[in-house]
Length: 125
Image: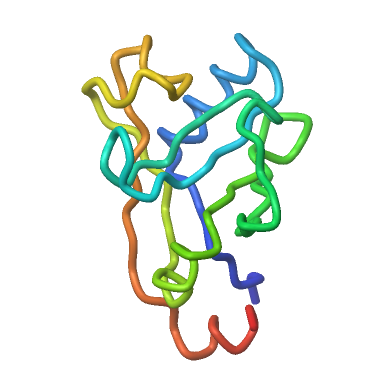
């Protein structure tokens, strides 16, 4: 049985991550809490967005073709609201926030979500 995860990615998002990794280097995500581009996953160079005690590491994503994990963070206050939610990172045409690395590519990352199952919640707690 597969390990429960808080964050997954679509094949299209994984391909964009591989492309951005090749262009820029190691990546990280921080789930925006409503500033700038609504509530979007923001992609940065690893370490470019400073995380601290007020952030929660949701997942270290292993993407085929990317040497190192891509970390996915969220503020602890937002996590309290979303802790029952499974997130799937996707990519769609259109311009998102100028801060996220994919913006010049004419696409933007977005989150698709669903509630975690009782089994997933038990495994993740």
